[in-house]
Every structure is written in structure tokens, then in C-alpha cells.
Length: 220
Image 1 (cartoon, helix red, strand yellow):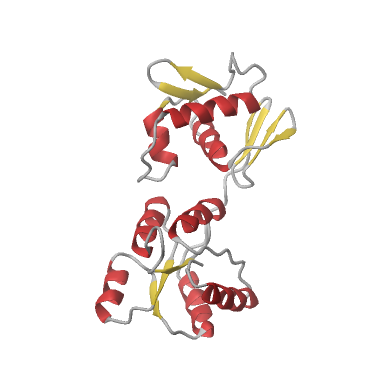
Image 2: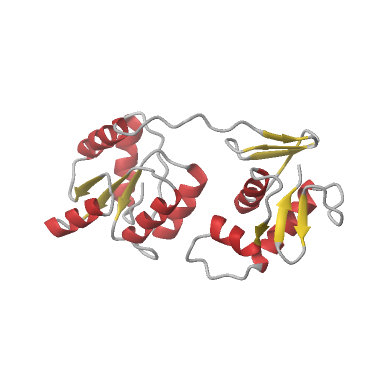
């Protein structure tokens, strides 16, 4: 649930929680994308007027990642705004002021239209290394290893495509925000840190292999 007004977040969160929903909140567009990537929600309530990244841009980024249903919330009441919101693919559109009970009812209605998610993939096991995509956990020789969210994303991408070579630019485009204006060496840093955490000998990696002049591959 994304809104820059704390009172709106608080009230809607309480009503949704009473309705049986687990709720995560964000107060601006950047935080919204961080929470979205971490929690993979079943539905997003999205205010259009947000600081840092506006609601339309947040919506576009969500759609580039997943088909998660989105209900737009806005103080704008003009018909053109509602039409634009629905035409670009929003699942519903609610204007402020609104009844919290109505919002809960609309959430239920939208979720009823969404097919159930398929079962998530089970853990990936490679001798000494186990990666659980659903729990976002990693174990080496049975012992848990603490990874940052982005380190896990890099490892998960490579391990889910064993033997496939990814360039640093491909990894950036796949895992970082598409508007990210960074140095591909960012990927190199993450690979180095991953090797320090999961490889018995980081200087002679067994799993995270460099393909010189191209990029990296995961060797199972």
C-alpha cells in the first residue's frame, strides 16, 4: 500500500489487516519499488501523487516486473485521469476521499479475478550449495549464509540458468532498475562478495565462474 500521507497508510492498513490481509506500506516511489521487490505482493494499492518517483512511473516499473494487479488511489477526480489510469492497465481506480470499507471490498473484488499463483520453485541444490528462491535463503555445507537482497538476486539469476553466460550489462538490465545509471563494475563487486561468502576458495571459484571478455556463468 503506497501513499505519502501517513494517516491514509495507517487507516487503510488497519482496515485491510482486519479484513485478513497482510499489509506492507511505502511512503514514496523509491520505497515502493524496494518493498515490491522484497515482498512480491498479491496486489498493490498505489497513490498517483508520490515524491521521488510518481505513481505512473511506479506502475510502469511494476508492470515491467510482473502482472501484479494494481488499484490506483488518487485525489484527482477528473474522468480523464480515471480513463488514463484504466487504459494503461490499472485493475481499478479509486478517488479520494474514499471509504476504507469500500477499498477493502474493491481489493477483494480484484483479487477474485486473479488466477491463483502457481506453486513456487523448490530449492536449488548443488552438492555443497543450496538456494531456496521462495525463502530467499542460501546454505553452504548446510550452514546458512547471509546475503544482501541484491547478492541473492545475482546468485539466483545465475544459478537458475546453470551454464548460461551472462554479461555484466545483461545482469544489470535484469536485476537493477531499468533507469539505473550505474557502472557495470557494480556487478563485479557483487560477484566478488558472493564468492567470498559461498566459495571455499574465492580466488579459484567453483560455482561463480568468470568467462573472460564476456561475463559470468554458474557452474553446478
